[in-house]
Each structure stands twice: as C-alpha cells, then as structure tokens.
Length: 148
Image 1 (cartoon, rainbow, N blue to C red):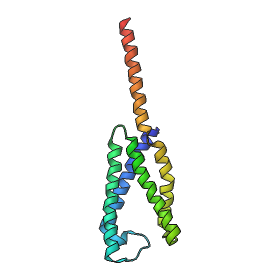
Image 2: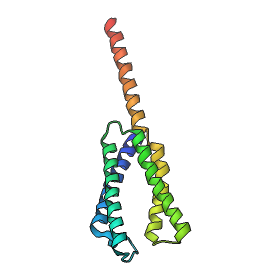
Image 3: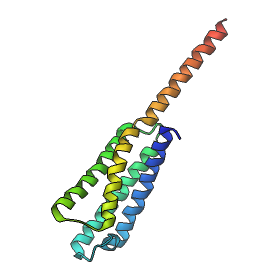
Image 4: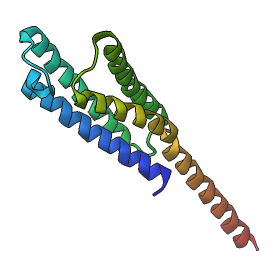
C-alpha cells in the first residue's frame, strides 16, 4: 500500500469513526460515556453538544479524504486537534486521576495515531506532484520523438 492510499484510508476511517461516535453521544448523552454515571442535565447537555461538534470534526476528515490530492494542511490541522484532545486526556489524568480503562485506551490510540498522521500528511500531495512530473516528462519525450 502506498503512503497516499494509507493516508486516504486513515482519513476516511477517522471521518466515519468520529461521525459515528459524535452521533452516538448526541443520541445517548451521558449513557455514551463508559464508566460514567448520570451527571445531571448540565453535563448531559454539554456532552450532547460536544458530540455534535465531534460529528462535525468527522465530516471535516471525510471532506479532506475526498479531495484530490488530500490537502496536507487540512490533515495537519485536524491531526493537531486530535493530538490536543489526547493531551487534554493526559491533563485530566494528572489533575483528576485515573478514568475508566476505555478512556486510557483512547488516549493511547490518539497518542499513537497522531505522529503517523503528521508523517503521512503530505503523502497524497507528493504523489500528485510525482505523477504530474512523470506526465510532463512523458509529454516532452513524445514531443521529442514527434520532432524526429
């Protein structure tokens, strides 16, 4: 698999997962949070609102995955937000203590995927540049052969 295909696949996976998770939180509120108990209407309202925002974040990933080439600036920006979320989880761990094990697993996943996404961010743009350079070289060869 090429780096460009890996980037496009990861971006699509991020998009669909975030939309699904976000909508899950909008529909279920506090019940969508593993290990959480009812925290009252204020926290439920916040969770549902943030679920909608997370679904929108997923739509941004899907938008990026559908561009040709996948824009590196968008991938870097979306990945920075993802990494900031992971850092927020670490801050919560330091300030509030150990959360449900599933939240720790999510933090590990976020911390592991962020460097990979940053590394792949420009893969599709580079592949497009290489294709364009190959096409120019082929056109120049064809023009040279036609002149002979």
